[in-house]
Image (cartoon, rainbow, N blue to C red; front, top):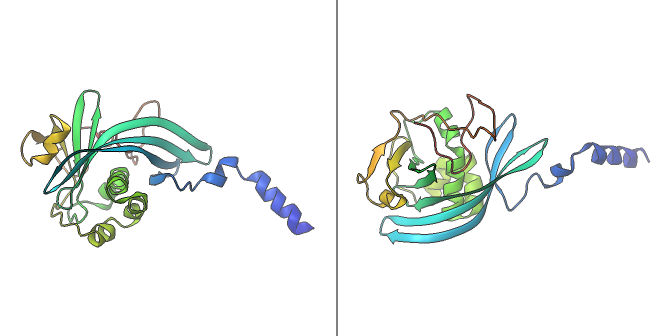
Length: 209
């Protein structure tokens, strides 16, 4: 009798959204004290394939999940360059195209830099290798990349300006560094979150210069 009453009390005290907190159709990226960034894959369209990799156009539905509920942030379009040697996520916003060059085996990225790139890492591996790979990469980027045969030799992550997404296929052509160091300051969407020095951009959002 007491056990049934206790169970009922727990159910009443648990927010309804908590029952689908771990939705299997969503990939969770960066988590902070105010909640977690999440996204679902809406569409993936092949654009161009080369011996080094495959460029794909993507459409994601993004969310922010917290104890207050799961809030939709709408859809975002972008690109991912699936390559075992030059993995990258490409974002287009406000007339600007930026490539986020990932470095799974980086030796110069600090733990904070790795954390700030969590959403891009999750996006890349979810698109190129499936949702479960995206989830695993959030927890163990190096291990997942190694298990998938990656040979990326970059010692640090980097953000570069591109004239168009296809420029990512041509190393050194049409791209210039957008940041001086390995730790770009993440951009904030004014309507989505408050200024937080420890924050990171949602999946697909362009880091500031």
